[in-house]
Length: 167
Ligand code: FES
Ligand code: FES
Image (cartoon, rainbow, N blue to C red; front, side, top):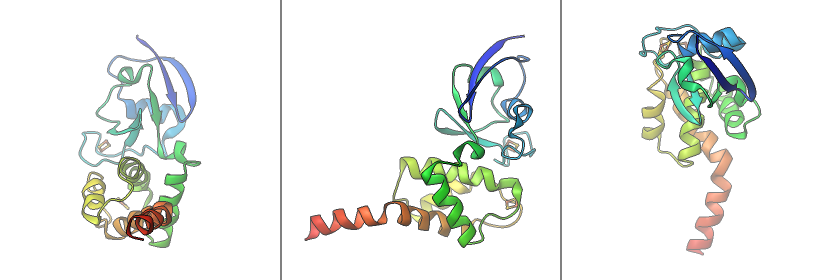
């Protein structure tokens, strides 16, 4: 069996894994089950979304051996991340978290989007969140929440810059 060395939520693991072991299964075995809940396991639902070197991936579609030497971050690993904390707070304000099945994946997707695009339109947010298929309804509240999180994170800075440009 191949050996892998991987960092999961800031902790380094060196493990022997089966060559065909899905990353999602590996992460659950490493204790990340609440942030990588069981879903379709076929790449459809997005509930298993995590960051690999900062990019969102469906962990059921990757193999554990593919993250050898890389950093995997689940929603749990984003607890101290300012962007994730702002998103979580906004989800609570907008009651957008829904059930536990996809809330972690939504946080991960929102963090990835806000890191690459601090001022996204509602359309852009909706497009990104739609990659997580929610059985409990649409993502209307979640889109509003992510937009508000962006405003709280960077709105003042944007305002200052536009004041400087205009004024
Ligand atoms: S469990 Fe991975 S996409 Fe559904
Ligand atoms: S909030 Fe329940 S599946 Fe999305």
